[in-house]
Image (cartoon, rainbow, N blue to C red; front, top):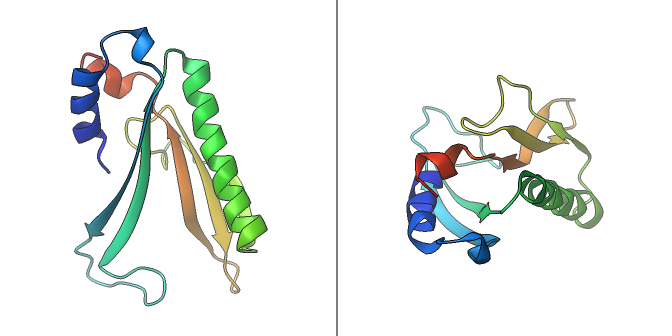
Amino acid sequence: TSETVVWSMYAKWIRSYRDLPMKMNQWVNVMRWEHQTKPFLRSAEFLWQEGHTAHATKEEADAQAREVLDRYIHLAQDELCLPLVPGRKSDSERFAGADETYTIEALTQNGMAIQAGTSHFLGQNFAKAFDV
């Protein structure tokens, strides 16, 4: 994920509350050097989508994270007909630096779950670290 790159740029672009909200979406190729990959689930290289936003208030930022999760739910359940369990990650599973991680888990035929999408409410953690 690209939080450090994005927030270093947000530090240059955001000068006042009038610049908010700021929203950025990016698609990147990711290479993971895993010992074993799972065919049809993920190879060593895959396409990764992430959105980054900055807001004036906690409520706006959390609402944005929930809205993104709702869009993921709509796509996966209503358009792709995937069986899903939406929810929140536990403290130990939460994205490092996030105040909250919302998730959709897709259910497989054998009853296992695969993380199919996440949306993070990062609070002010990265904003403070980059003096935004």
